[in-house]
Length: 398
Image 1 (cartoon, one colour):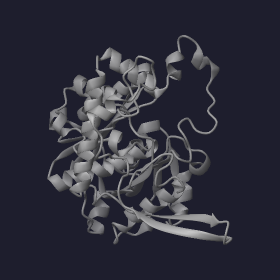
Image 2: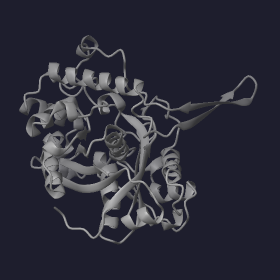
Image 3: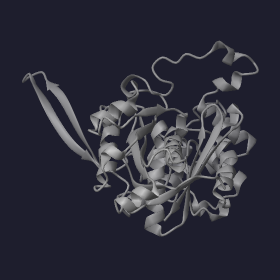
Image 4: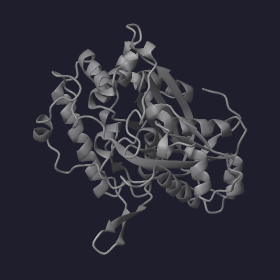
């Protein structure tokens, strides 16, 4: 187990609903506004805590430019009305950005250099597309020895499917189960505790009256899950990334918009303000893998995170394994011999969406609320990361 001076406790965790990109409910909502919403909500969930005690805000974002540039962490902290003494830093580990933010915030507390931190993640794939607005790669990436760095995520999923012998039928079945679990979870109200609603205001010019028409609606639910998904409909979809491949839009994660935030404190603050912890942050691990099979990253990171926590993977009761692609998710399940019943019990990114840098924070909120609701002990959030990495974090209900 790792050494630390004190424990880091999560006392509040929330997220926005996840919108589909680029034409979903949040297509015209700025990412900094999504982030402001969860920051205000997460602080409000600890009403007795003095916000001036918050030392820093760490925010994960995979493509921090344009609407989500300008150090969105600091900008959102100020826009959210947090004291100007609260810092803000934006971090980027692609799909693991949000989880890395949680780990970094926890570490500040665990080494005794802070008592109150906020970790968050945000991404608008509607406003800032995959690769950003102006991708520019070092030309050495395209040399033979580096060429796998240039592979698109879908091609890496095809490589994993081929190497781990994951069939198209297995991928489609996994995708269908993701939708079925997500729909069942929504109907059962499983996401209620972790979700903060978002008011969306849309202004449209009426050329006939020369007035601005204002429409307002409250978004309360993820919009990606499909009750009408079926094996037959999934089977009709053509491969996207390779002519004779097996990876389709239907068995891949959805492009999405969303944000999540967690409030972490030391034991001293817990007692001082009589706060009730949702969970303790236990450990984090990251490990590199070959870029061309980046999807297998969790297979390398999960054992390390368990080792750091002093537990075995069999002791994990709830795995939030980010479903970047069904192919890589199934390969990880196969590698680690995980119990499928413990993996994504409420569905995953194929149904719910994957707002890149926000996903780690969003799914951290899912797992800490889920552990409490179902009276389970250990949960894990894990994902693969572009250019070949895996990340994993362990949480314990207390």
